[in-house]
Image (tube, rainbow, N blue to C red):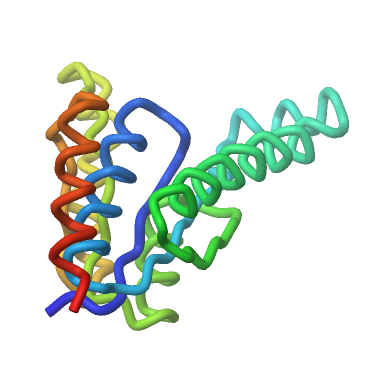
Length: 161
């Protein structure tokens, strides 16, 4: 069913939940994993760059480190992820990468927002579904390390012939 899974990862707690859920799915299904981090190009970042040159480069370096930690974690779980770092607006960037790689599933974390922030920014999930031609999983199930280890062992056993 899902042969290519794109995990959108920003290093947050919610991103870690998405990473774990996506990794478990990939292990159980034998799917190829793609890990994506998006360096958001916001008006505030452009103003910071104008005021203090190097702000964008610093943010890119930060996201590279986040991506490297995500790749390392997935490799510890026995996966061989393909990592990508892109710049732009997160929603269309995730959609574009999903299309480029032929993803069957995109996994994102759920970031809680207050009603005013949600109204101002719009619903990323709703917008993202407009950019995707594949399924979307919004990971919302935090799992303890112990429970994750059990799930991972079950996924490993299920993947063996």
